[in-house]
Image 1 (cartoon, rainbow, N blue to C red):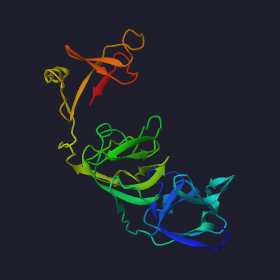
Image 2 (image 1 turned 45 degrees about the horizontal axis):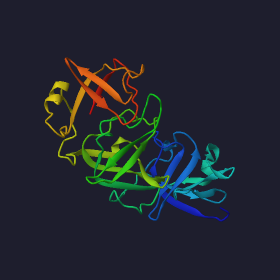
Image 3 (image 1 turned 90 degrees about the vertical axis):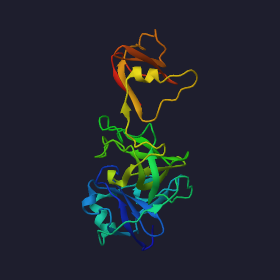
Length: 283
């Protein structure tokens, strides 16, 4: 950028929870942009809800294949982070404590602008992703957990393993989710700022409250009737793995679990990795 351009926006995402790393998301009434900055814990100076002015001359702007725009310094042929010692040269602090109003979209909307604050109502984490940690805090690995509406539409919710809420369980109910919307490999994804962005205290689309009740394997077997039998919603079984896939006498896509005097075979579409004597729960 060679002209004396100044932009102003409101910080809609900072690094306080660790789910955004050295990246600040700035939005005004027209669009949003990611500001790349080589500064940890910058939220103490540039918190969510603060106006920030950027003196753009001397910086570089880029757009990736997914139409995510970013601004920073030059790192080879890519956008680099503004050095910590130069932040005051380019960034000017403005008013803070400003309210943020996300734009509400339907989950099947296809024209959502990237790097903007969005909200989805009547949303819930899918059965496989409810009551699960947002990310893996032990291995510091990121995870995508999927939220859905009461139809067939869904979006991934990305969380970093470094986030302070990584080990927090996703809620089991239905409600709203507020997040920064980005595109990744042509598809939309949501990045929450913290768990306060998720408010899901309501009844799920299937009429359950999201609470999963443990039943015995014997109780599950009794439910079977001739022909196709569907397990009731919000049930889980718990047992010990008694089959050993390692030695190959059992198909690696099958597992046998026992609870008391009763067992059941669990079938997978691919090889599983649950060793013998593992205690497992099956939702």
